[in-house]
Length: 388
Image (cartoon, rainbow, N blue to C red):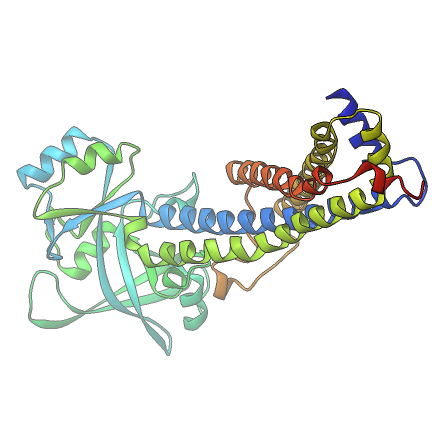
C-alpha cells in the first residue's frame, strides 16, 4: 500500500518539468474543482432563496393561523376557543382582516387591512412593535402609488360591514406610522396594518369577535391536534404552497444541469489516467518484470484518481465557500427585488448538501479511476519493453 501511494503521488506531483502525468492530473483537478464550485453555489442559492422566503413569510404570517372553515368570524367567548386560548396562554394573537379603499389626496387604491395588537416581527423587529389607535403601517409599493410619506394622513373607506349585509360607507382617517419593505409584492402593494380596535370599528366586529388567531408558538404540533371542526389551522407554508412547489420543481433540474459540469471533470479523470497509463506503459512493464502484482499497479492509479477527487473537491469547496462568504459579507451581487422577492442573490451554507456533494464526487472519482486500469490487466510486459 505504501509503495502504491508513493508512486501515485510521484505521478501526481512529478518533479520533472513539463511532465505529462503531472499536467494531466492538475488539469483534471482544475476541471473537477470548477464543477464542484458551480454545483455547490447552485445548491447554496436554492437553499438561500428558500430560507429567505421562509423567514419573510413566517415573520409576516406567524407560524400559522386559526380560522373558521367557512370564513366566518371567530367568537373568542366560545368554550372550545376559550379553552384552547387558556391552555396555551400567550401563544395566540387575534387579528381582523378586511378589504378597504385607501385614499391620500387625489390618489386611491384597494388595500387589504389587517387589524392587530402588535406589528409582525418583519416590520418591527424586536423593538417598538406596539401599534397605537388611529395609526397605520403600509407597504412601500402602496406608499409609492399613493405618494405618501411618514406622518401623512390617509383615509380608509369601507363599503360593507362584517356584522351586517346592508350596504353603507364608513370613512376613518389614519396617520402613517411606518412604511415597510418586504420584497414580496403580495405584501408591499396590498397590505396595511391598523390597531385591532380600529379594525373592529371599521368592519363592524363585536368586542369578542375576530377574523382569526395568529399562532406564535414553537409547540405547533401539540396545538394543532387540539383544533377541530369548524376551525382549521393553516401554516404559512400551506398558505404559500405553490411557491414552495415551484422552488422544489426548480431544485433538481438545477442540480442536474450544474452537476453535468462536475461530470465533465470526472470524465477528464478517466481520460487523464488512461493517457498516463499509456505514457507510463514502459515503467509499468518494468515493474511487472520485477514482480509487482497487477493489483498493486491498479491500486496506484486508483489512488491517483482518489487524490484528484479529494483535491478537486477541497479546492472547489473552499472556492465556493469563499464566494458565499464574500456575498453574505459585502452583498456584491444585486438582483431586482420586484422580481425575485429580495435585492441580492441569497446564499446559504448548506453543509449537509455540501458534504453529500463531496462524498458522491469522491466515490465517482474512484469509480472513474478504476475504469482505465482495466488496461493494466491485459498489458504484456514484453510488448511494453520492446523498444526500451
